Amino acid sequence: MREAVASLAEKTGRGLLAIAAVLALCLLVAASAEAGPTSTRLAYAMGEIVPLPASVPHEEGDMVDKRIVADLRWIAARYPIYVTDGYSGPLPNGEHVGCNQCHVRGSDHYNGLAVDIVPLNGSGKCDETWSAITSLAEWAEPVQGEPAPPFRWVGYDGDAGHGCGNHLHLSWQHSTVAQFELAEWVEVFPTGPATNRKPRSPRPKSPPQKLPTGPPGGIGTIHSGGVSPRGD
Ligand SMILES: [Zn+2]
Image (cartoon, rainbow, N blue to C red):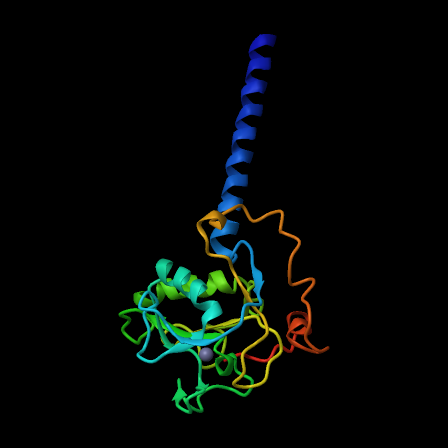
C-alpha cells in the first residue's frame, strides 16, 4: 500500500511537472507570437529615400528610407500587406512623392520612416480581409499606446483616423530629425535567418536604455513621456 501511495505521489508529481512544462511552453510561444520583434538594433548606415521593392506590395511610386526596407520585406512575407503611403515630401530632383498634406505635423512620413498599410486585396470595409492586419497591429503594439521596439508609433483601432477598415500606420523609432531630412539613426529589427524566433528572454543589453546622441528632449524621451506625438 505504502508503495502504491509513493508511486501515486510520484506520478502526480510527474504530472504536475509535465503540466508546468506545457504552461511554460505556452507562455513562451504566446510571448514570441504577440510581442513584437525579438531584438532590435540602431542602423547608422547612411539613409536614402528609395522605391519600395516588388516584394512589398505597394501603391505605385511609394518610397521609404532604405534602412526600413528589410523590415518591410520581413513583414510582407508574413502578413498580406499593401502599402498605400511611405515617404511624403520632396525628392532631390525637385519632384514630390507620397500623399501631399495628408499627414500631421512632425509625421514620420516626412522622413521616410513610416508606412500606411491596408490588406492586400482587401475590400475597404472592416471584414475578414483585415484580420491579418489586426494581428500585425497587435504584434507591433501589444498594449495600446505602448508600441514594441523598434516601432515608434502604431496607429490602429483606438486611434482616430486609423484602424480596421481604415489603415494601419507603422513608424520606426529614429533620431531627432528635421522635416524632409534623413535621420542619423533608425531602430530596426534584424531580419537575417540567424536571428529568427529565438526565445525572448533574457533581453539583450541594448537600446532603448542607452540611446546615443540627439539633443535633450529628443526622440529618446518620448517612450516614457506619455505625451508621445503621433507619427501619422
Ligand atoms: Zn501614416
